[in-house]
Structure formats: structure tokens, C-alpha cells
Length: 408
Image (cartoon, rainbow, N blue to C red; front, top):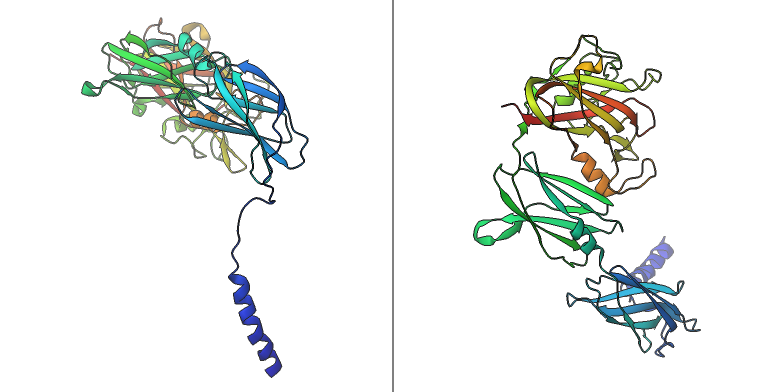
């Protein structure tokens, strides 16, 4: 036992000594000799950027290549490329002027070569083309902003309105990389208003301002307390909406106006096992005649690998919405107006089933607003017809709806 105590006593200062050693971070090697510079540099000018191709020096100690240049905003930018490639993209240019770029080869000791200076002359930044395509039109309770973004660049469209002595201030924003952009912005009064819009990229390059004067159309949320199911009437094509594990239920449709947009079983869905009845549809009563303007539909999100996932299973991909003031009891469509044919599209454009970006999730979680044609009379009943869903079948899953219009 004494021998053991002696050994432990000796071990303590050793452990303390080892614990006091500092870990010093730095280059893995020490080489003060600058590497040779890159050679044979070629420049490919592109929209808002340029791709540089070069020949690396024959130096095994080279770690990476970097380019240093100044943007039109005055900010200095530095981009790097590893020694495993011979190309480097210099981006962030907001003009088409000639810019000087310094290229350095850097070794593992962070020692840089002498710079190779090249001139780049980027093509027009994508934000300029987006700006030229912008259209701002009056919509119900707001405006619609549309544009095209053929290069699918990450851009921000910033709408502004006058706010007293502050001048024009931002009141919303569209942040997207979608090729086709169409966004409704609500919450505006029904009086003429001048909207100012600019387009910006992630480097804070900004276009000139586009001004448009519009007068939003009146609409209001139609109270969900008036919504009703159509049961016991079930027309051809209509499927009894199910919920939870209780089997088919005539009250399943009413979960679409209980205020819950995510949690199961607050979800109306038609039976997935019915595959031979053609497009599934569900019908409900808005409870009052109104000039219907649009409907917001919240698709039910499945939980996949712990993440809420839209554009999936029974979420409608291609569908129609019909409206009627006095439906024919036999369920035929001759007493109905088609209010629109719609296609759900991921903002990201990703084709892979079940794969989403955060933008896809954020927009889906907020609900999709589908506008109705306005050249129809006041209507009261709505029929949602699923042509096909994201799974490729015809059942539908809706967790919540909100109808808008003018009942006056």
C-alpha cells in the first residue's frame, strides 16, 4: 500500500505539469521563402463576376491561391481556391468597368508570392436585368410584384413607400433565387400609393429605383366562423376527408378552419387508398356571398428525418378551384365557375422529390396564396380539385384555408 501511495504521489505533479502546456495554433510548417507566382492566367468575364484560369507553380509547398480586389462599394474582397484546382471566381461586381485583380500563390506557412495583376471587365450584373423586368400592379389589399431572374442569382427585391419625413422606407422584401418571381404583398389601404422598388445582390450592389403608382383593391378575410361542410352531400369526385385514425368522417373538412396549420391530426385529407376515382375533390361553404379574391392554403407538412417537409405526398401539385353561388344538387360542374388552374412550384427549383431549401420551407410554412379570376359574380361555395399531388397520385392533404374577398 505504501508503494502505491508513493507512485500516486509522483504521478500528481506530472499530470499537473502536462495540463499546463499551451496549445499553440499556427502554420503546420515554417517556410519563409515565397512561392513562385501563378502563370498563364486567362480571364472569362461573366455576369457580375469573372472566372480566372491559371497554371500553378511547380512548388509542393503551395497551399492555395487567392485573389484580392476592390468592389464598387469600396470594400476589399478576397477569394481563395485550393491547390487542387486551377480556377478561381472573382465575384461581387456591380458595374461593367475594368477592375484590377491581384493573384497570389500562398504556401503552407502563409507566405504569399509576388502578385500577378490581371484586368477583368465583368458583364452586366443580374440585378439590372431583374430591375428592367419588374412589374408592380394593384392587387386585392396590396400589390403584386413580378420579375424574371434567368440566371437564378440570389437577389433581394426591396419595395418601399413614403413614411412622412423619413421619405421612402422599406416595408417588405423578396429574397429569392427563383427564375420566375411573383409575390403578393398585402396590408395596404385602398388609396393610390407610389411604390419605389430597388433590386440588390448579396454584395449590396443596388439598382436605380423603379417607381409605380397603384391603387390596391378592397378585400377582407372572410370569417371562418361562417365556413361549413357540405355534408351529408357528397358529389361525384368528392371524397370524405379523413383525420386522425378514426377512419372516414364527414367532419374532417372542418379541420381546415380550426386555426392549426401544422399539427396532425388537424388536417383534412382524402383517402390515399382510393386510386381509381379520378381527381379527388372536396367542397365547402364559405357561409356568405362575396366577390372572392383569393384563398390561402396551408399544405400539411410531413415530418421527414425530423424536419417539416412540404411539396410531398398529398400536397397538391396541379389543381383547380371552382366556385358557385347555387350548386346543382347532382354535383355537376355546370353551375360552377372555374376560378383558376394552379401549379405548386418550389421556389428553389430543386427537382429532387423531398429535397428542400430553407426558402422552400419558409414560404410553404406561410401558406400559399392562390388568386381567383375576378370576372365572375359573387360566389359562396368552393370546390378544390386535385389533379395530381407531389407523390404522383390524386389524394390531397390540406391543413388550413383562409378565403378572402369583398362581401359588400
